[in-house]
Image (cartoon, rainbow, N blue to C red; front, top):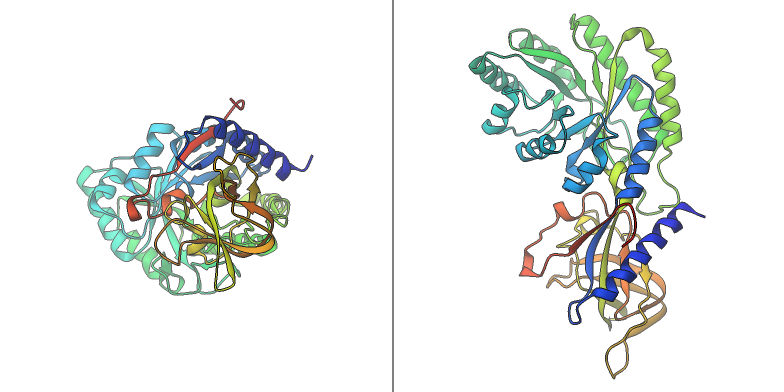
Length: 408
């Protein structure tokens, strides 16, 4: 059976059982996370990596505690971008935590100086001074990696964080000066370099080339500036999910093959290659499902109005895209009057908010959609609930369900 269809069949069964228990008058709206599928996927990723690679989960993609627990056995550690993410990761696991954020607060620096993280990104010259100050106060050493904003753009990814002006990292032209500054910071131990440069890259060959570039840069700087402890090459995440055409995903096989080749090529260099994956780990395990409340036509465009919207699932509006979905037909209709319906037409899926920007998919062809059906949005496990404006108009939050060992 096709894996995507198998996953969808599982979700459909689960939604059917939930609908049987649904209280009348409260339309269905929920996030569903298939933790069994997640565990299989992350185990596959981990097992496909060569020995010199370590796999970290970027918590920003989805910090749901149940998801973190499902990941904990397979990953080598967690990447946190806030003090609260550090606290959450420490409650889940004793595995290493990497901390990276462009605007570090004093309470976060205190957490770092007290040893709550494995190492921390240096994002600026000011970071060097502040981290050294806190390290001196507690009389401890802090392990750091230097985040580099490369001088050239390295991919055609949706979001670019190198080769362009951003708030992230240190301009490659300033790396020599920054490394000199670090030699005067007696309590900061340079463990390597961080090169997170893209988001949602779908070109696996380009990603392999990017990683090789990172390794070469890191080795050159290590040699030139005599950084004996700098074995870490953190290439971040950025591995993409194809929302436009899910049937043509990022080729993990190509990336894995390239990484194995690099292990042989750089075997004598004794480097640690770190991957910080977020979206690619968890997107597929998540679904956002919302009931169709009404179907209407306005200025020759047909709208299906949902119990839900961008206040729950902001990603489609943020990226101005039509999110992939399927229609889950529901036979039950409680009213004595005609059921709104559209067949073999294009529809726009809009939410319940009082703004025309509350759109999850625009002018997408469907075979049939009826009021009372459930629209299930796929690939909703990453950058969904936690990036959304939950309290706009004070609508109820969605329910959350987790599929684990069996469907109950």
